[in-house]
Image (cartoon, rainbow, N blue to C red):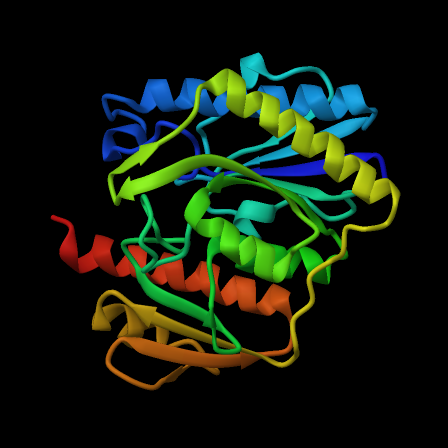
Length: 280
């Protein structure tokens, strides 16, 4: 396998602290786009320099059209657009290892922009009783596909989870939260230097067989607590989904692929209900 997969989020990147950073037409989106593209281009160039023949980059924030493709090097394939099956890890199968770039803490954590998958839809997402971040959802699905996580770069508050679940993964601290809308980060040059070292170490671990796919016990209980009871009411229409409280649903599935699809569907259900009855 001569390919590495890179999943790229926004909220764990340095300097991104305002909602004005997070979407096209917002006043600081171009600044955020330049930051994410610089980190992605550096990561891809480093992996190609190490000797990997192909780098698959999944643009994985919001509408998933954030990275400027004109600034990416030869040898990169860019996955863009939302919605898409397997969302943040689309096209990752068959990769040597994965890099999570710009990742943030789970919903409810005391951390800048903490949320899980859809901050406007989900209050909490759990797998087999464990509260799940996007990092954990993605790492479990990649593990089912035998792709280990090699590097996680993002918010400091996420990294305890990384040490707990994938202790073999290299860690890069891109920002430390001061509040939900505030954080402190080192200079871009210092952060890129640390990221480059982490990629080197992950490659060496991969060569030595030290990177491991993350497993999860089956069957998997997926428990989703929504922000609004109306979302749970709509989700209850899905066969196999049980509504256990006003805002909460549970379903048991046999694979992480199925679990991931349920989370994706629930996010779309919440968005659909908002569009139908709340946003006018």
